Image (cartoon, rainbow, N blue to C red; front, side, top):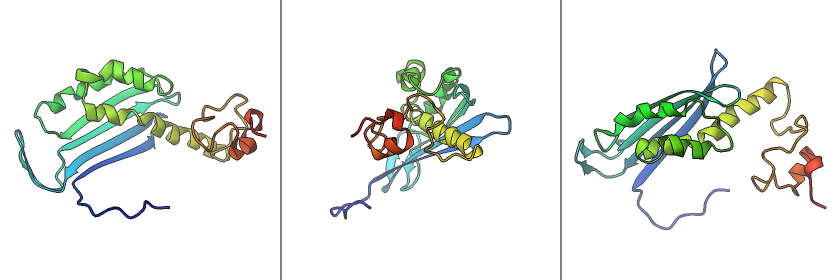
Amino acid sequence: MPLSAPAPRAHIHTRAISFAGFEREDGLFDIEAHMTDTKTYPFANDWRGQISPGEALHEMLVRVTVDAQFVVQQVEACTENSPFQMCPDITPNYTALVGLKMGRGWREGIRERVGGIAGCTHITELLYPMATVAFQTIAPLRKHRTNRPDSDMSHLGKKPVVLNTCHAWADDSPVVKAKVPTFYTGK
């Protein structure tokens, strides 16, 4: 169901973010993010001069390489467009994430290593959902290769991590009753 018709309005700003997950030939996985901020009007920038409509004020890219256990092996960050000349200088700091595991504590680990003045707000924000993208890249691929449906939890033998993370996976939902009845709490 789409959103309702909006009130009369004018388009001012677009932040476009895309994520993609890749399996590498060496058995590792690359998770990539790309973010741009654009305006619909021209404006002045102290460093770059006039920024045209549709020209990126911010454009950041990040590649995080993880192993099958979701441990970060490599990080590459790039600032293609920024409001200040010094912005790209911080990108090497993101290698501090090597060794961090995606999962519980991911966001805190990012903040500890590249938060605040140790990083770039925009690049750091791209890192948070990368764990979800990594899980969506790796876990369904494993199930696909063993001919199991993506929602199959029968092989776990323990409480699924998705339990109570959303409406569909509430421990009293029909999904849980059908997929992992051991953990179903409904009537």
